[in-house]
Image (cartoon, rainbow, N blue to C red; front, side, top):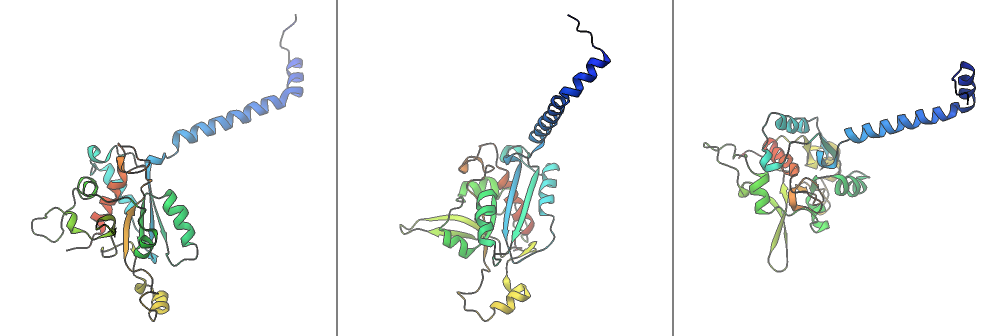
Length: 255
C-alpha cells in the first residue's frame, strides 16, 4: 500500500476534512478555557459576602483593610483557619428601595455570609440567623478587641456590645444580632434622618410608620465559613467570624 504523504494528498485531505480540524481546535480552546477557569475561580470558602442595609453608602476600604490584615499576619490561623480569603464583597442596598425585598431574599439570605439589617426585619423573620453563643463570641468574634477609652485597654467582653435577643415564652432567649447602628464612623448611614429626602418624607410619620433606625449585624447559618456552627460549615473555615471581628474593631462606638 502506498502511504506516502505528498503535497497533493495533503491538499486533498485538507480540502475534504478541514472541518474536522476546526472542530478539534474549537474543542481544544473550550477545554483549555474551562480548565483554566476552574483552577482560578474563587471557591465558596475563599470569599465572604456582606449584605448591608443602609440609607446611603460612602466610599470605604473595609474589605481592603481586612485582606491587608490577613496579609500582614494580624490573623490567627489556629483560631480562624487558613488565610484563604481571596474576595470580600460588600453590597449595600437601601431598605426603602423598591427591589429591596427581592434582593434581600436572593442576595441576602442566599449568597451572603454576613448581613446588616433593620430591627423590624429581624422581628418579622422570627430569627432565622446564627445564634451568637458565648462560645462564638468569646472564642472567635471578640478576641483581640479592647475597650477603647479605658486607661488599661481592657479586653472587650460580651457585655461591651448590645444585641438583639429573641425571647421565647418559656423564659429563654436566643442572641442573634450585634447592634451596629450605635457604632462610629460607619461607611454607610443607618439613620434615615441623616438623608434629606427621607427626613422630609418621614418626619411627620407616626413612630410605627417611620423607617428603621436600629440595625444589627447577623450571620447567615448557611455560611460555609463559620466552622462547625452552621448548616454547611466545615470545621476548618471560620473566616466569617474574623471579618466580623475586624468590623467591630474598625467601627465600634467609642466608650
